[in-house]
Length: 167
Image (tube, rainbow, N blue to C red; front, side, top):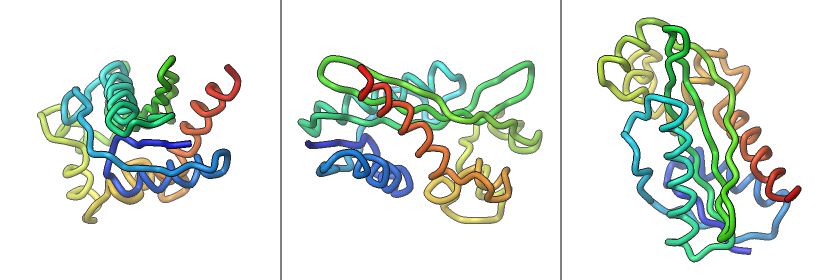
């Protein structure tokens, strides 16, 4: 089985490899593909669409059996900005999607994102760490490491793989 992942983000590629190889003897290729959404998705819908677009592009460009798209974004709920994460699994016949944990952002971070900055650089300043999005992510920082970005994406990947297997 050939699997393509629509990103070169090392944290996302590693988690796809870790989860997919539990179930399939697959070769996994990481591809830099377009999300066709904003650099900073601002709604659940836009973030989900970015994951779908990445999965479709990975499937086609990688000439793969399965394509995965992982997208992080933010969404406004009752005046509070939350992080949101989506995964899509594309096959030639169907798209499967699932979302992960949503966690409110502190006002200092939310205000910067709402002012037009991307969450990644804002988190680097806030946490005084480099490459936050390539490592523990905002969820890792705001849960004091109790939930890592890898764990969150593992959960969502299991949800889409479970849907695919159930079909």
